[in-house]
Image (cartoon, rainbow, N blue to C red; front, top):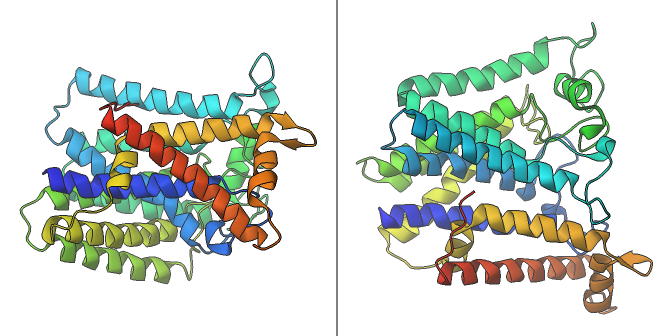
Length: 361
């Protein structure tokens, strides 16, 4: 059991470290292509990071709630954690270093990464403790197929819906109508309302992986690899009519990212549980306090971006003074800055782990 949980912790920690890395380059003007999101359709390695985390949220739910009963105490714990995650996300969206330390109302972003994690955790947890695994498969299929039909068949203001970044894109239109100026961009939000539906499916697919890891099945790594490969094939075939798109969190995107997640976790499980190879301790440290590491990295980055240093910010000043040199490219300088940030939060995670401080959100 410890090793199974260890493999999940390593996967979670590696995902968080990647989230910190891709979110904190030295400059967004010079970033290697794999560390950028796809402009719209398609995906890059960076586009795998957030769905990997939602996937592992689902896997972790199995370990956390496999023996929990459907009573008021369990629902209370799930609800409190959900509200904490949403509250932290809203705090990040509203905070500014200028008094009174909150942005103008029109500039506060309502959707966000932590908000989505909270909502997905809530629904995936409630479904897991109330629904058997076979009906849960059908629910997952309904979420994916239903979202596909919504996005392609429902017209917007009498105009056929599109999957392009346009006013008659149903998900984008709904976010603008509901949130107005509180979106990530004026015309859409990558963590918007409608696209949260298939993101729940991302977590439910992680639930099924957790059930496999807890089962008495032999050759679990082989099973996960087979599932992962199947998801990749189906997802890329679905891409032909429902393009892979992170901003819209399309159903094909859900399957492709879950496919890669299963393949990655299968490899970690094979190395740690089957071959008994000890590795990835730093990932385990980060995984043990994953949400706090992500929150701190986002919060401190936000502060450093707002503190003025001459004509630049503290972030920009440090990058220019320490990392920018004539003998290396700007892309490499930007990456080295990000790696330094990652090293710092790995050290923080190591300190917390050694002190047995596990901050549960």
